[in-house]
View 1 (tube, rainbow, N blue to C red):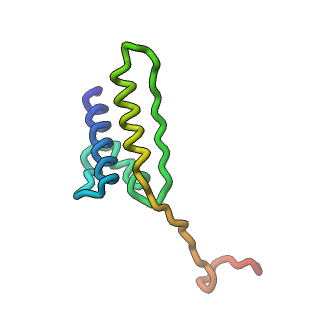
View 2: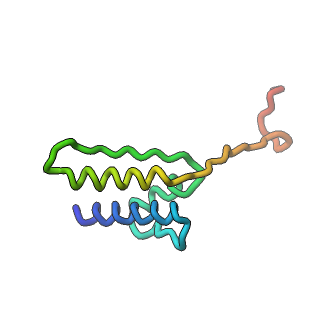
Length: 97
């Protein structure tokens, strides 16, 4: 179970790196996590990533890796566009009804 989680997080880091650098194929299908997050990561949406760390000395390495991941994720830029649906003339509900 733990190895699948690590693989998914590694794939997520790879996807974010590819999106930042816009280089080549983005491997969304390499893990279930990135497959689920594909619309949020590279799509028409705003994305928020929350990372938690600990000040405990014994977990310094993990906290540092988490902060590096957060810094890479912060560089990712999506360009969300408002989806505007025009229903006038299509038999939709108008303001006159």
